[in-house]
Image 1 (spheres, each protein chain N blue to C red):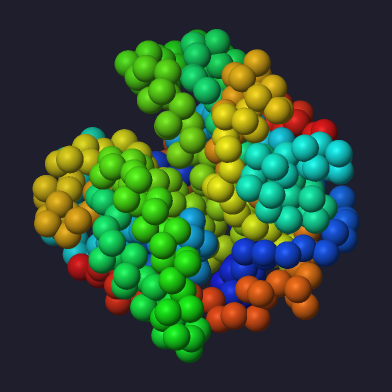
Image 2: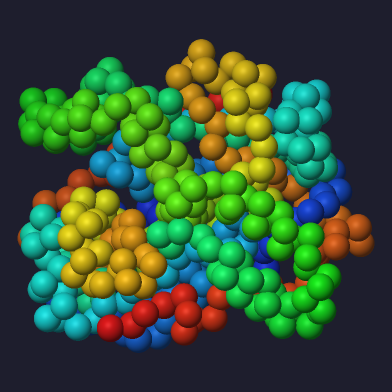
Length: 209
Length: 209
């Protein structure tokens, strides 16, 4: 399977070389993110695609000065919706009706079940649900980058509140969840580049019954 | 990109036909899960691979009687570690040292940073962190199934506490997070099989800057 080869090729590059990733490859990674499934199909997140070197430089200190932030070609910021509102559900239902060329009234049961979930949950619960969905897209992005032989370093280690402030995410109803610098490994200066991949043994990771 | 074609092909099958998925395809999907990255490389989850028709029948009622549970070939249960313990960190560090043929003492700084995180967090926080990692593997499994042209229906809709009890997951230090029936679509009887995919428009899903 192509995906297995890609996942074997990839690793979390600790040192990137600053080389730009061609726009077509970035577009393909974004298309894969767009196609990622999510609970109820809501896709309750936004992905920032940061290309601007100055902005990356300002982000670096809130991400423990990790060098890949500035040595990447593009930095993806996966930001979950800070809440899920009836207005967002309404927009999704409208969009579904248009995409499927179906009367919006036919989606009333679906809409009501979605509204039932988000109104039963408080803001923090809705955010946590949205954040979990974000990780599915995060996983797809990592796989898609690997298929394009683009390096990507999944990062949870950053000051999310500080990054939200820097990027004005609160005003957009978003909260940053993960980072994914995209670029190319600097093989000579990356201590991790040539180390064997470590993964739990199948007999521990899986229970077959 | 092969992955984009696969993601376009897939959808969340609402009705499966009971046909078995060849073992080689199941093995490939499990290998892709195994290769999935996770925070600090810990892979804090276990995936149950359920083949037994009787067990699937007993699971169906706690998953709102969704038909794919019994009409699937295999049912994957993604279960996160209910806590992350120093013992689990120790095992991971030992395994890393063996896989990289390096003295375990050389990993002391890494071990201490991992212990710092899990001891600062309480049980629920460690579980939530583990659950988020589970979603990365869940996303990879969905993509891998699609690459094998195996249908998969991502599910969050089930009674997790009841499933944990049924499968004895508490005793194993696990909590169920998501389900993924693997099988083949029953195109004629699946209302979703021929509807267009709905995804947020790129100009809404992404902010480029």
